[in-house]
Amino acid sequence: MKVSENLANINERIEKACERAGRKRGDIEIIAVTKYVSADRAQEALDAGIRHLGENRDDGLLEKYKTLGNRPVWHFIGTLQTRKVKNVIDKVSYIHSLDRLSLAEEIEKRAAKADKQMKCFIQVNVSGEESKHGMEPGQVLDFVHKMKDFPHILVVGLMTMAPLTDDQNTIRSTFRGLKQLQQEVESLHLDYAPCHELSMGMSNDFEIAVEEGATFVRIGTALVGSR
Ligand SMILES: *Cc1c(COP(=O)(O)O)cnc(C)c1O
Image 1 (tube, rainbow, N blue to C red):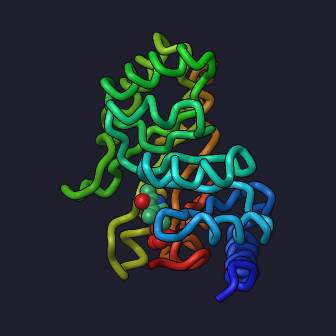
Image 2 (tube, protein in one colour):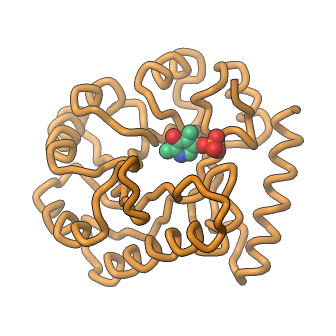
């Protein structure tokens, strides 16, 4: 399938979800997750009108960066090893996987060197699944307050992954839990943690995520395909 055809289908589904939830389509950005596909296919997504691309490994990002450069807005969406931060810091606009203090320390150091403020999502393990990365919901407020001492990190929002399940209620309550936390942080009105954004929803659950308040959905398979 052409990316443009997939995108038309996804856009229609997002619009319907917006109608159901009384939201504006303009408040939701699609991140095309290109980790499974070639740079050519990523270019096709850009030609179809996509502006945001997401990669979950530093080597995948670097390879596509070579061809695509700064044309897309790059998002780092995967687990980020501390020693890999230096490879991505000057290329990505957003990191979605801030989940520990040691990572914040490294991002702070590298962002300071690159003379930029890094926009970060705190990744939260809302569902409590062992296999999921992210910090426990109960740790988030404490962590946010610590970011006061990290002037090169801007906490723009929270990110989560729903459990792999067909149970819509479980998925929905995961997204709802993240939204609740996001509102708590937002209501603190911290200049270093505005926290207006919610990064949630993938190929299988983006409609529920939109209904529950996602501002960035991260879509790979349904948009650009998988290997
Ligand atoms: C791979 C990945 C996605 C996209 O997954 P699809 O199911 O292919 O849409 C989204 N977010 C993260 C963190 C990922 O690793």
